[in-house]
Length: 85
Image (tube, rainbow, N blue to C red; front, side, top):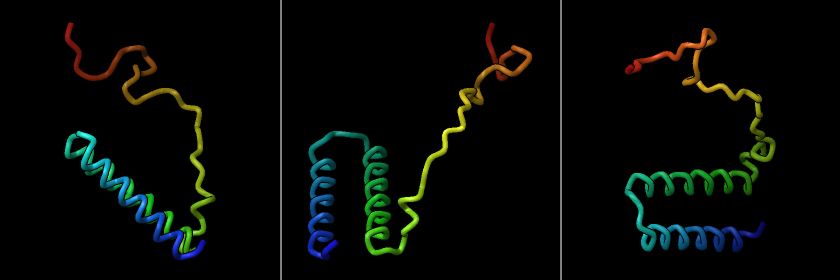
């Protein structure tokens, strides 16, 4: 990928993020999370483009098939934690 395209992509992402931050009302904590996620994604993309993080394409999320949550009832059928009657 030519360097000019990388710079243009970074400018587009920066402008879009700036527009979202300026014109879409949201809580400061959500805005910080959004900015952090965008920065992490851009850094990973740049590492992949420059070949420093070539294993990025090999990352897969494995589905274990477990549907039980830690808040579900225990095997005896009673629910753990404080309960009001």
